[in-house]
Image (tube, rainbow, N blue to C red; front, side, top):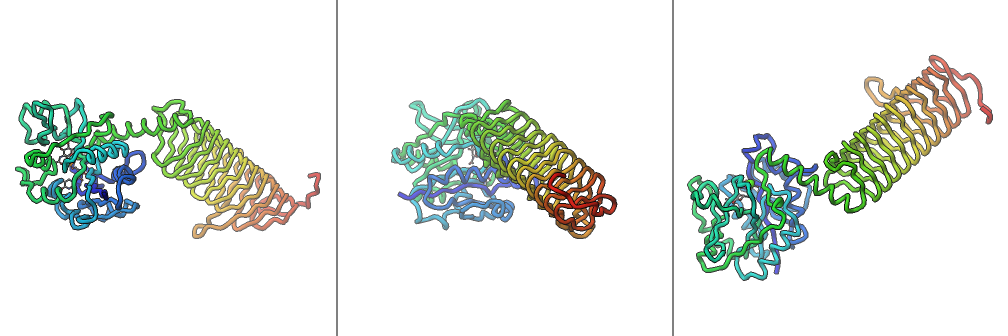
Length: 450
Ligand code: UD1
Ligand code: CA
């Protein structure tokens, strides 16, 4: 038995009032379509077929996953959309899992339960529903006196009696593939000119098949996302889910309601996250760290035993035992090696600071390579940009950079050398040398005792 999946993602999402296709709107840092792909991944034998239409190219290029993209040129409804995947899948699988891209909270475990239920049912269709209090445009699940599913009725065409039904259609189905392709050919056009996938449920019942519905235990999984109010609701639920996962895995969140962790972030045990911390993108945080308050880490790697306060890291690497902040900014290519200390108001970009180096107060380091145990005095600046190009600065080990030193790049300062306060260093400084002044000149050679 081979299982394939179809994910519908061709709609514009008119109710989002957006230039961006609905399925590319982000939830916890990833497009909602990404969640739909993750949810089916473990259950299928082929890459999922994704039906795209509105801004098809934008959707396709935003999703960097193994998938089969199928074009629905005109959005003629969910039934028509599934039909568009026919030529790509026919004969390649006998079971089809069909989901929509606008339900990022639907769990893979629930879809696995749907597939099992379908395999045991002997029916060509198994659907998913949930019991709720908020209709929000959901199709209603109609059952007969004996409680058997007889049809799904869309809200727009439901009778007042049917509108009172509190069992809603989620839009996650498992089908016998051959049966579905045949049934889709018989779906009638709706008064709105669309072909509804939901109609195949009533067709199966008319053909004498029993249709079962897998009722979600956690109703929040069924939340479909149609407008930006739903987007905010889903974001909040997803955040709570991610936060709970990390707390159960050994991470302390001092205030989960004020902690924002995106879905691909990794965090080690016994790390404490203080409030108003945002961990974003593909960031990794080690063990025994204290992060925040008021800290944002984006696409960065942070080691263990690190302390970050009120700082922003973007595309940076921070090794073990680093302390940083408040008010530091690490930009792309910043590497702080073991035990580096950054005090307040430090900015580092495209630079390596060697083990044990200290930069206590308001400095800018760009395009620099700095050795071990260097002391960077208050107000030090690498003048790396001449208005046209960026130039490198190289500083050796055990160097002392005096307060307010301007390092006019390209420039090198050798091991164990020192610069006096206020120096403007325009020429390379050899090892074991004290320079000072504007422009900085050699004052004397340094002895071990200096
Ligand atoms: C659909 C269901 C409804 C269910 C609800 C759950 C139908 C007719 N209705 O309604 O029973 O309660 O989902 O959220 O199926 N799409 C296409 N091509 C199209 C039309 C839609 O790919 O031609 C895609 C959209 O991109 C979207 C999904 O299908 O991902 C659902 O479309 P949407 O218009 O949101 O359907 P609902 O009105 O919510
Ligand atoms: Ca929807």
